[in-house]
Each structure stands twice: as C-alpha cells, then as structure tokens.
Image (cartoon, rainbow, N blue to C red):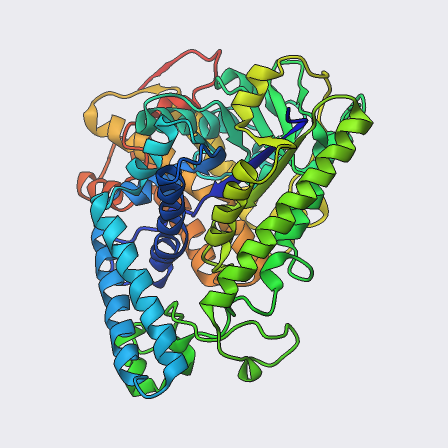
Length: 536
C-alpha cells in the first residue's frame, strides 16, 4: 500500500507573440523553439509511456495565449519554415564535419532528433493542442488553466472586474478548446492576494497553486504545512509548492541541470560558426542568433565558454536516468518521513515551468520519462496523482486563509513592480477604468460590438505579466516596452473612436487580425455586476 502522493505539475506558457504585419520577428521564435525542444519532446515521452503500458499521471497548464498561438494557422506555417531551415542547417553540419568524428556524431544526432520532431508534427497535422488533449482524454494528463493573458492579479485587485475578466475569459477559452472546463488554475506567477479565492470560486474553479509560503503562513497555521492542501472559506483548495523537490530541479547551483555532463545552453553555433557560412541561418538583417545547434557540455560552471568540452548525448541520457532515480529515491524517503510525522499520507506537489524541460535543460524530457517510469515500476511508497483526483480521494482538509505570496524574487510582488516597470501601472489602471466604462454600453451595431470586443482584447494583452517580468530581468526590454505601449495605444484609440461614434472600420479590421486572441470574447465580461446598462 502506498503511503503518499507525488503530483508533478508543468506550467506551459508563453506570451502572445504573433506579428503578421512583419515577415520576420525574432520573438516569434520563442514559440518555435518551445515546440521543437519542449512540447514535441514531451509528446514523444507520453507516447512512449503509453506504448509501454505506463499509466502515468501528470498535471499541465496550457495557458490561453500558448493555446491560441499553437492553434494559429499563420504561426503553424511559419513554424514549418523554421523547422525546415533548422534541418537544412543540420544537414550542412553533417557534411561540414564529416572528417571530425565527434562533431559528425553530434550533427547526425541532431539530424535524427529533428526528423522525429518533423514526424510527430506531421502525424498530428501541426495540432499540438489536440495531441495533448488525447492524453487529457485518457486521464494521463490533467490540463488546467491560468490567467487569460497571465496578468499579475495582485496588482489588479483594485478592479474586481479585471480579476473576473482574467479568470472568466481563461475558463471559457479552455472549455472551448478542451471540451470541458478546467478543475484548477495555476495563478499567474503563483501570485495570490487575500480575497482572490472568491473570484476563483465564482469562475467555477476548484483549486489553485500557490508558492510554499502562501500556505506555511496561512491563518490559522496549517497543521500539515505544505504537505496537504488547505480549503479556503469559499471551498476552493490551495496546493503549495514543495521546496525540497523544487530545489533539486530548479537550482542553478545544486540542481540536476547544472551537472557538467549536460548540454551547455549558452554556447550556440549561431554565435560561433564562420559568419558567411552561418549567415543563411541567422536573422534576415544579418544579426547572429541562437540556432539551437549546440556541441558542448557544461563541463564546469565557472569555466569560460571557450573551455567547454564536447557534449555526448549518450552519457547525458545516462545521467538523466541517474538523476531520475535520485529524485524518486528522495521522494520515497521524504514521503516515508512525512507519513510517520503526520500520521496520514502526505502529498508532495512539485511544480516547474514546462519550458525548463528541453529548452533550458535539454535532457529534461528524458528526466521526465525516466522519473515517470521509475515511479510506476520501481517503488511502492508513493502514487502519482492529479490534483483534482487527490481532492476526490481526500475531500476533508483544514480550512485556512492563505498568505499573500508569489514565486518571484523574495516571494511577494516586487519583481513585477519596481523601478524598471512601475511606469506601466498608471496606464494599465487607466485603461482598465476606461474598459469598465465601455463595458456598460450596449453596442449600437455590429461594428461597435467588434470595436468593444477588440478593446477588451487589447487591455488583456497589455496586462500580461511577461512584459513587466522582462523589464525586470533586463533582457529583450525594448520589445516588452513596445508591446505594452502598442496594446495601450490601440486600446486608447478604440476608446476614443467608440466614445465619439467614429470607428475606423479599416483600421479595426487590421488590429483584429494582428491581435486575434479570444475570438469568442464578450466585452461585457468587464461589466460591473450591479451596474445598469448605459445606452449609447
């Protein structure tokens, strides 16, 4: 008999990056890299587990912006071209390195891996969302949602309408894509504020995911710390991140991905190859970029990039299996200790960004594969579970009020509100107030209804926490600033045009095509619950 539960949770999210107005925008490659290095490799793992009879359990978020991009025909077409170009580069590398046995071995390895990516892409006819849905339908995956555009909810709490819009639009979008509403939500950045549980309950969600200190400092203090969920007074459950298992995978200093055998992320052919040779495979303007072809291993964290040794995927795969065994062993010992201390089966909830597995940590999908297999075949201490299934089996939990928290720097809100990004919020708040006012109108005709719906899209897109996050990290800041300003400018023009009754239908049509997320959105989601409708 098992004496505890392990819940692995992967948060698959990217901001909505789609630029039909341009033939090439570097940031769209965030999606293409994630498809090649994370989403298709995970699907490959899931297919292998199913073939071998492993009844695995895994929880994933597929956020609304990510789903919208994965479903978009333009981005699917552009991904095809991206993958073709990458395969051409690797074919050139096989030829170029034919007299260097190790580099030829690596180039041929990448050639095989990309051929398998192409095969799975074609098998599912480019429908990555549908591919994940089949594992939802088989109950191997539980797919949950997030905020509609990953808006940082504690910094919107003065506008209940904005909170409701982020949650309700997300739930409606998820239901449309997957055929049933989500059970739970990964709060954007795991950011919670007191009272948010009421809006979560109103959206029909049964649970949310918090950082560890959100439960540890709940009132009253939870008897079982983070190793059992708590119920809020609304009946919504809260699961907290386990620090021990998180650190073993996340930590840049002591975590598994820092092992010297693994592939070095920061040493890429796009920056190292002869310029004339690599020029056809970098940006159209001639600037170098990462290609995803990497030949070196970490070797040593403090070594200069030039001192890195050549990578060997065989030994890296062996190390991933070793680390998966260590991870499972540690969970067994952790759960045995907790079971005897608590007097009841604990649950260890281990959440990670999905893009860590494959994109940042190349061997991550192998680690997931081995972990799920070892948990299924090699131990009997714990059982893998979905969070919703756990609640069905364990319906009685302590009632407490979580503490304000996030999983950002210092655990609260300052990473999304500091000197780098504070300028954003007065504009976001003014746009939110204007959207709430617009929502109280009754559209006079179809053109005004379209303009009102597009205004709601622009506010949601401007609220994305990704932009303020990027401003804090100091990477790709001009792009994040440009995106924030462009959505706010589009919203303000829509507000003024609607207010004057002079909507530019041609301009609106272009903006609808550019920012085409949430085609079924209803602007009235921003309407105050107890406000009379204003006639235009």
